[in-house]
Amino acid sequence: MGILEGKNSPPHDQRFRNRIPRTIYQLRDMFLTPRLPGAVNGTNAEPGPGTRSELLNICSIIHGKLQLFNAGVASSFYYDAQTREPGRGMITQLENLVNPTVLALGWLSSGNINNGFIIAGTSVFVNYFAGWISILTTAVLNSDYAAVFLRSAGAYHFMKGDTNGSNNFVLEYITDNSSTASLTPGWYLNTVNSNVDNIIVPNDLWLPSPLLSDGFGAVPNVIDYGGVSDGTPTRVGLGGDARKAFFDGANSYCDIYSADVNNKFDGAEGSVIIRGRVSAAGVWADGNTRYILAISVNANNTVELYKTAAAGTLRWQYAAGAVVDFVATAGHADTGFMTIGSTWSAAADEFKAFKDGSQEGVTQNGLGVWAGNLSAISTVVGAGFIGPGLIWDGWIADGILLYGVVATPAQMATIHTHLDAGTLTEQILDSEFGINNWSWWKLNESFTSDGEGHAEGIAGGIGSGGDGLKFDEPVGAFDYLTNTFHCSFTETVAPVASPAALAVSDIKKQDIIISANLTRSAGEVGIVARYSTGGNYVAAYHNGANAFLDEYVSGVRNNLLLVAAAYGAGNPIRLILDGTAARLYYNDVLIGTAVIDVDIPSSTKHGAFSSIADNTIDDLTIYARGTNGEYELLESF
Image (cartoon, rainbow, N blue to C red; front, side, top):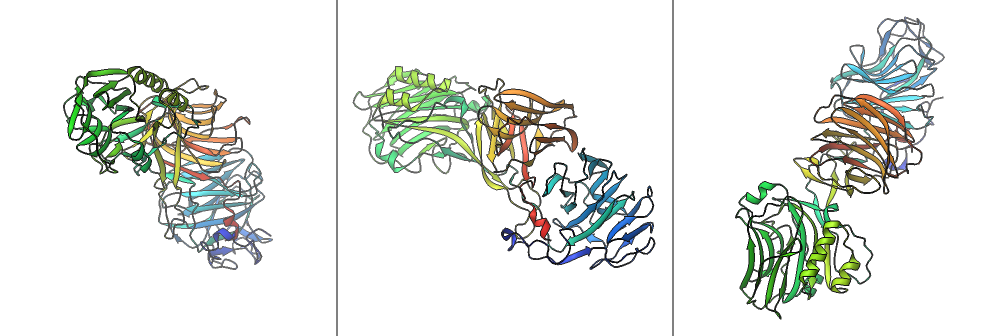
């Protein structure tokens, strides 16, 4: 007996009891009554509901199975028409798949497969637009069941008992082809050697929920990775360009106010150092005032670093007791990172400005007397105040605030050198300025998936999901740009010799289907899977001429697939991983299959990849294959 037969089929997994009740079938046929060829058409499904229809009246029911009477003659066998709904599924049992000429099953339109599988010889295909995509190219004789669940366009295609011997329902592919509204569940048969049995169409709607889904429409958060030194340094140096946050000139800011900062801040004696860059040369002449840092009580007591409305002008300002001291220099056109900062000392009656480790302008004298507590509204990085307003347009990497310590010119140069090289550590800050005398803000974007890369959705939440997961950027950096994931910075990190940017999220699954839409400016752009530190991961990408699948083992690149594939902006790339087996598609064309090195760790971190800035990625979506029983619910319908 098959798993869908009888009253003793496995109960629902407890996790789904409240989501999918015991189903009432729209169609169920177990082929209980023997019937000769010509006597099947128009009969009722057993135990029903459903009515059978046949194109050529050459099918029979023998030993509780549907069989074709004449080999080599094709016939469509189908049931009552169903209205397409996302989540409407068909599940059927396959038997005796002995090199069938053609066995097509799924959702038919006018007697032809509209959404489904074709099993031909030892290959399996799913339909896409007017053609077919090869998804499995080795023996499929172990297959027990197939399931096709409709999307608003296309379908999710499952098999139970796949080529790797899995005894679970496994998600084999996702299509988005024809959105034909009226379809009939059934088969297209052209072989006498194969049987089908146990067809059901559940009354309940169901779709697999993505593990991660991101349309990149949400606004990322800028977060503070620093804080006041606790006297026990542990962090290693990751300064400079390796970590940074993008400020969009319209909505971004990073709130650095805390009671601790307010208590330790010294308006009479102190220093600040911050590292950033504009997003483009034109920002210097955009006519806007843009703050990289503001630490203020009010307009009469403030430390400020900003670009003025005047073209190419930076201003360092210190106000205490309404006495304003400032340095302003023109002619700035930097598009790379710059380190800017200032020192103030009431005891020495001096205010100094610094850029890239050297003093800017002349020392200012005649300082006023600082008074008041810091404002929670205007103690902020990347804006003049929390509104936000006067927002920086570009990137900010690190910010260091010294409490009661006036940095010497030599110390300002030292910190700039370390930030520029990415070698700054807490130990260096303690050595230069003393334990507990500083805060180091290590800025970075905090990206969380928004769930909008998954276009389906059924009332009640079935089929939605994949949102709220955090992205880490172990290499380079991304930002959000016009609802896409935009590569803003690449870097070279040993042992990998070439520059790259990576953003990954831990979805707790190793065997996945991962897809994303790629728009290439130059270089390479794609997806990365099973990422772990030390240069171990799999990368699937396009370089404008070819689609690639590479594996990196301890930073050593091994090309697995390289196939010419016509590039198109926004075309999807899809990688399917199952153990060491990999399948790569570009624009829904099978690029090839490969075997991944067993030495690649079984990491569950997956995400985006680019070798050059300005490449973009959209609609990143990741599903579990089902190799760990994620779709066991299909056995309970």
